[in-house]
Length: 450
Image 1 (cartoon, helix red, strand yellow):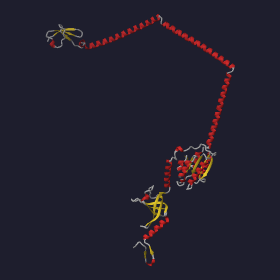
Image 2: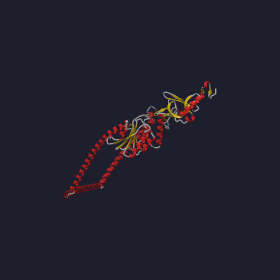
Image 3: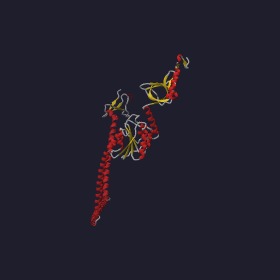
Image 4: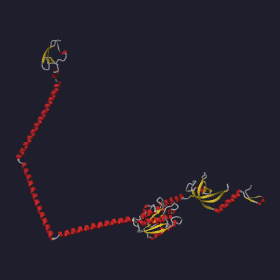
């Protein structure tokens, strides 16, 4: 069968499937053009060709989508099933299967994921430009007189701030500058409020605050224009956005970040009770200092009066008499010390003269001679005793090796009486020869019998 229109009987105009799908595709593409669509990814597939095929669904329906490689290569995230996304696409029809589909041109994360990436991008950019530098942050006044509070006039944050400020420091003049704190109109309104407060130059500090919420609720304070307006403000800015765990770009740019609006109010102003106690302490110290100064002046007056009295003629005469008495006493003491020194020196010279008299020298020489004689006798006695001990020791040693000592043990010494030769062996004698036997206590004449 031809794909062209075919005329059938009964005069009916019949379309082929190709003609129908082509006409439906043209109608869809002409009617919708490029649209934005939000939904959840499902049935995600990435074949080797690099094209992406997936479905976008919500609670009631789903639509098939295709994203071809030239576009898919530009994605800044990795799509996955279950991810919420925003898609810019052309509505079309896949003619081969007659299926309704979207040709996706652009895809991005939706919800908090996209916002968080934008937050990190802007944070890195402003940090690199020095908007967060600690050296540019200005100190807050210790006792501010006027405060501008930029916030929602109907929110809980402004009530908390005013309550804390009224309790801690009633002297502070507070001007509430109402602005929207969420939505598209919030960033330009906040920027305008910051510029007007800075231009008025009436306030000592600015508090930019709002209550807690989701990241979408707080997104006005992550706006680049708001951050640059805070940085350009000539008045120090304190930020208190959301709860303690919430951080916004405004917190990093501000001169001081407070965890909550109430905490910001406590940081901005001193406590009136503490000021009163400090004033009372200073008043007491001032009174004590005045009393001490009065006492010093009184003492100085007494000294001056005493000096005036001391300079009268009678007092000066009495002073001269006292000085004269003192000098006379010192002179008498000096004469007595001089006489004592002279007497001591005379005694010393006399003793020295006596030591130099011939009789004294002769007596000292005699004593020295007697001492030396005694030393000589002691030395001779000691040397004699030592020599006697050596002699006795030698005698004992000689006796120990003497033949006489051997004879005392029962031995006899035989000698030839004619020659005095000692007989040592039997061969030294002959039969009938006369010998002399010397014993320990005498001698015997003996004859050799054989």
